[in-house]
Length: 604
Image (cartoon, rainbow, N blue to C red; front, side):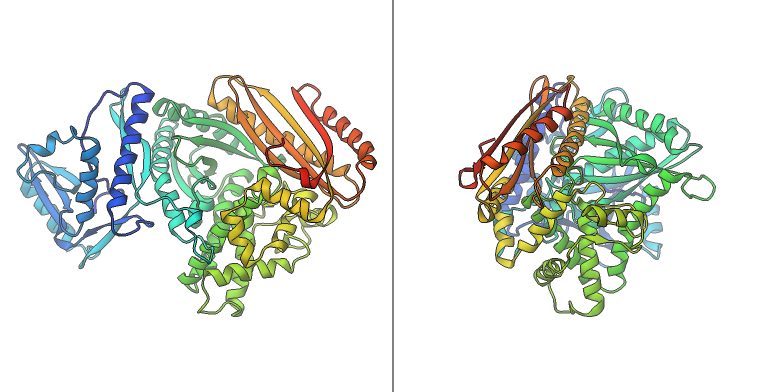
């Protein structure tokens, strides 16, 4: 077909939406219409819907002075009429164009406009003669309803919201076997579709003005098909062909891209940041275009315009990051698509479990999405290859197998090159280390001795009964306090509150969060060095926005079995470290030794 993307107009309607409130009301109403539609469907709708087309779906619509080549969707797609009916209930005045025709609303996708109907019919004949044209009914998956708004300066339409065309999955509806299937990613992908389209348009606009080309390449959870709403962001590497290097891209391309996104999406939250440190640092543009959409991290990769190879070390790192994920997918795809589906289900479940256990997030010193993906892939890939997980296994079997295998590990150090500097450093410090197969980046580079101990302890405590309980019942802090009560009489509690002044922009808010995450890790390392014996502090953090400042509360807990009096010297040392760490930052802190039976989630 002569189009890369297919858009079917569901409803025509025009209203003055000059205020943010009016726009939000329109988006809310669209969400209500989708909810009405999904409630009326016999099927659950966890995976979205399909548009069915057949060889006879090509049609011509004749107008007064032109003709349109279309895919007529009236046949085989009764659910579209039900969806249209739901929208007309919410927007009863937005069907003026449809009432002008005797047949009323006719669902179709416009493929092109032609001067005459004969020219359009000749195009149909040309398509049908093509060997790649369908010979039987085919299905096109529908991910979401997108709401567009006209941008006054250029008169073009841009997406302002994406509403998934499936029900939001719920942890409460998990069966006896707690495995998160593909339906969990379908909702996330529905939220992401419009965002990716808008980022791609903005990148192409920016590249054209800078006399280069730009192409998006998905990475991370979205590329693996394991994204979960509320937990996963979207990772994108933008391949830029032009006479630039990575530092020049950060100076030219990213500022222009951010300016374009701010112009078209004035409510978007944008910030520039640096990921990693030293020679391994990468420039990242983080964007959140819509309140309901996942955040998106964009990393530049500058390619040689002659041979398409990365031009410098930073571009090589970004280029190889996408290859890390490709190597995971290919290792399953060559053997069995069923194995790949099992891998995705187990990875989704493990990521959700880690988040609920409070051991998820690279910025907090734990494994992030890439680290958990590498660990799950390492265990399952070997098991599939050796036959330990045979053809009859399912996601539940593989999930239990994963935890049983990881429990056998004394450390979380995985690398094809056991002599690398990162591996030696991790062994000496007692931290995690996971070296990616292609890029050789360390997925656990922010880990500390305490976050490593917490991760291993949570894994060794996991069981078939506890998995569902963790996923469905317990919150992060409640789980932490429950574990303290099981093994310790007392707990040293250090609660630190930091404040950073903010400007009114959302970008300043985002930068402040990054700064505070860094401060948190620095303090955690300082407290680890001054903790008694083998005890390690366990971290809980939360952030709350205020009108003129971002206030973040860090709570550190250490379980002890001695007397509270013997801890007084340690508390004084901790106090000095906190004062040293934040000499000029508004900071409040409280130190105490409390019986673990008295610890409550709302205490701090």
